[in-house]
Length: 315
Image (tube, rainbow, N blue to C red; front, side):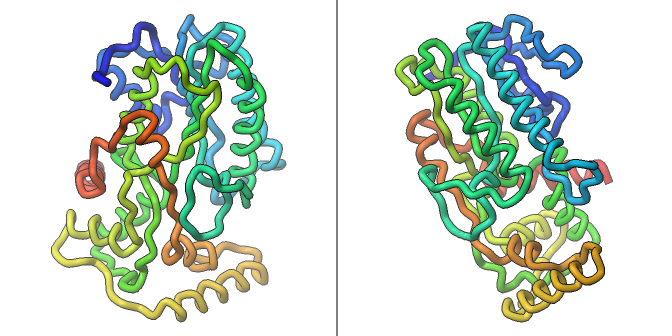
């Protein structure tokens, strides 16, 4: 289907976040005007018929909240449900909810959209509860559709989190012991996220279900070794990695987790860190690609190159 301009403004929540800023810019580049939803006036949707809900309480590595569970539910479940109810009252046509692969849990593996969910942390639990509530709200609704997009790690200019740590390491010429880290993990460039959302906004498939859930990725997964090598090669010569026995890595990770319990403080290497480096964690976006006739607009090589260029400009 050829691209066509959306007829009304698109409401974006979380427009000042990493994905929100990129989406706002991307939609405007494609001739779509946007409205930035404001928490101080949550009932004001400015007459928008389409909403992209990005606002959330993201994963906190060192959470200082008195009651983190309550804060996650308030920021991810309750906010989402209240906004969706308001959207239905105002007969919004599409409610796009940006969720996370964390709703399925942390177990290594390769998953399609039919996988059972077993979230392992408060962030994943609150996102899954939001999904469940949305499924009930939109069940049997004829004029409004809810599309849930579960994202893996998102990277690109403006990046934070784990990718930023790798960029910092490469910029300092750090050679990492990732030569044996061959298990692949899904991720997605922020431009691909924006383009997929644009595809949904422009879609006129009136016969689609009132509630649908998808995974979304770059459609080409990378291992930790491949990812860091791409970053390093865009900054310097060489691969940036050297071989190190995986069993010894896992032993050190297990020891680190034990030390954390004993000393009640975070260690740089623990079981979770080792799992992120060495375990498979992959999600199929084939259903979305089929339903929306979509393919990523940027490859991992192009995405990493743009990310490195951005990082080099700000440092």
